[in-house]
Image (cartoon, rainbow, N blue to C red):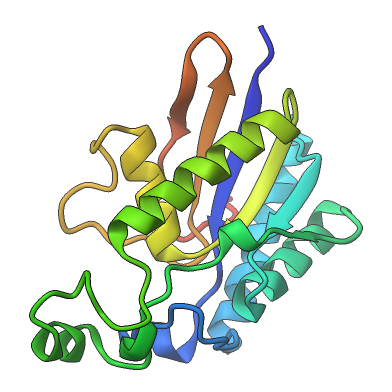
Length: 201
């Protein structure tokens, strides 16, 4: 039975994360804390490699906060280069990008229909396309992806059939969850952890 393993790593912190602003596809860079989180995640993942949890390849969203996280993690894992996959992009929030969550909810009666934004249905459809591509192109491999909160939340919800994330639960920056896929069982959540990844000593 061929098993494909996918790690879902959220990017490190940005200043807009601190302010709870909708980033979407706006290219906001990591802040100093985010850089340290990316480096710490790399160390934690490298320690996991020592325990046998290797990674074959790193895929990343093209946005710099994800790409820079991926590069730093790749350096820690001694993986040369990262591959960009547009399907790992964050959900676009259209003209609402830059607003706080409170402003977003106050300004739009229906936050799922904002001019220029990706709807939840569109995000779910893209998520399934991403999962199918990962299963088809990376069968039997261990792939680490670096992406964004809204996309990772959607992937978790779809694969866990609504169990994760739990109500009111936020995904920390640089948190890691893991999916596994086989032809017999399909996709399943192998490990769910919404906390920022750090090396435990």
